[in-house]
Length: 501
Ligand code: GDG
Image (cartoon, rainbow, N blue to C red; front, side, top):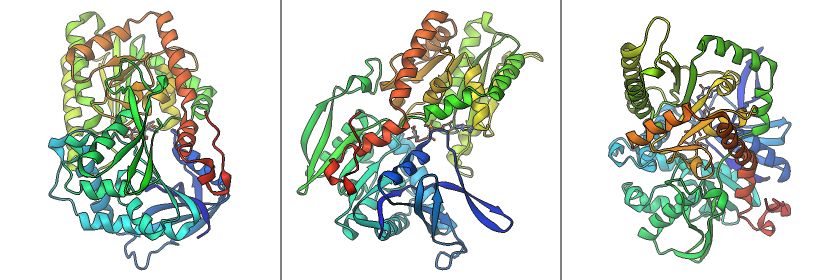
């Protein structure tokens, strides 16, 4: 019970490497910088702890230390690893979270798969996370919980430790009551979230949707509503809102609702973009392109990411514009994060089928219109592709935020490049200078990519400059500090101050 800040995030905050039979904990440099930014807060709060899970054959007797003390550039902090069996991980994470909750959160009600959900295991694992957080938290500590696979942790933790301040952040969209209420456990989930002091979402739309779900089932009262800030309200976006609820009252408690878009580590990405090795890689890519324009699409293999719709649009482009054949290539990077899950295997096969058909129809020995890449590319190389791409084509059907579009802008220190962005990515409300596209409309998809490929240089540069300003301003640090600003400074242990932006 000694940490003033406890982060509860299912991923471990480092890589575990075995060197000469000894375990070493190394910095896991994620490109979006979420993990390092969270760890950097440990310094502000004096002492921190991180709660994650690790697979164990026998959880009662794990073959690893449950709690390790890490001493690195971020200070000294405990990492508490919950030993979970393979079955528990599969049940709580792959099945309940990914197969049942993920589609509902993204508005795909028809993909909701009720039968395999093992709710008792979901509860049991969430309870274990709550107990581990309660064991680490000092009196009055802030406990910051991440994402929907830990939905029940706030409610359990409030029971175990009424003294702590609880904040919860959703990395996905949050749907309105018509969709959310498909989940049979909707009341229990909402009651748990309402046990928080702060509930965070990327954008105002998700906040208002959460309020709609809460009002449909529980006696909540709106205490405060504010006008949405202009930097979160691009007029072109299908996800924009005019006002947002910022405070709810429930069972005598106040719950703050905070919309803060997750950003990227701009300095880090710019430093990679500026390396000589990156310039060499860009030159190599350009040689391979042999005068063709490059359209780049990057994302996890997931039906929410709109990969099929994009490949179909590219096929129509080549069909309707014979002049573009042999002049443009699409590099479609789609990497499976969750192997052995039927829904993802299906989408992978569908992508391969679509790309194969397209190449068969239009390709030749010298020119393949689509390069479908299914293996992960090292991030330094990805930055080189961002630099070489004339267009980044990001077309999710639904996406909480989408960091790829921000990474693309961050990498374009040369000020060139066009971003085509789905109106249904949370990032669209922040990036009005991107070319908007509606992935549900053929006309919009086909028009946007053709427009982007022909955009004159002055317009490209003007739009990119505005996008880069926003990506820099609302970076990953801004996100994390903004979530903390939802607390009154006097509520934070030791009066930690996150000055207004
Ligand atoms: C969730 C929400 C929200 C992709 N391919 C490669 C690669 N990536 C990296 C990208 C980027 C990350 O994966 C994908 O980030 P997204 O934000 O697009 O998507 P999710 O994973 O779905 O994340 C999302 C996010 O949480 C944060 O709150 O934005 O809406 O769904 O960083 O660079 N990285 C490397 N090689 C690849 O081939 N190295």
